[in-house]
Length: 263
Image 1 (spheres, rainbow, N blue to C red):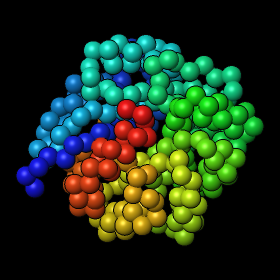
Image 2 (image 1 turned 90 degrees about the horizontal axis):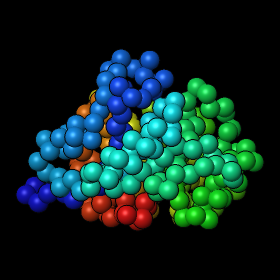
Image 3 (image 1 turned 180 degrees about the vertical axis):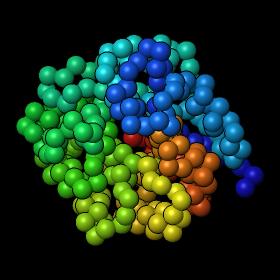
């Protein structure tokens, strides 16, 4: 392949452990260090066949979201590779949303997130407020609770929701496939193709084939999940598998991200 693939990464993280505390890192030895925006950009410089335009920063589940916003404001002001910020907020009609944010994420997959949280009245009203303000909600779900997201979408069909990491799938069960088919019916729901282990190539190919067959072409978006990807894969292998599945599809790697996050 001679032409480079123009690429926007819709899901990356950076953090500075000299300033920030990420409680979830206590269980993840591999990631217990700081990751800078330069570290991130340098990872893409190692990959010859992509033209890395920039990425969408996603909140890191720190214990101080306001400090995180302040750090990211300064980082974005000094680096044009940070194209947008998905910030942390507790989803509710009274949520405080930083002006720098393009979208919001409140993790639904962590230990302190109760089952069914996205169906609580205050959460639903918060999603409706985000929709009124043309903001996205990044939804990171436990795979066995994707049916809750389907119910949430039924209550907020106009919401622009971005499902993270293909729903954190680990095997192609009938329950998973049925929930994803139900989510595919909502015209404003996007799916980040990321988050899966790449050691089982047959599973990855089956997963990507199912995903392509299930969702409209303009609703699938490239994401890396850097640096968390290093726990279960690496950036080059991830991209190579996606090129195998999607070719040099500029919609998947670039255009759909622009549309999704209004870049």
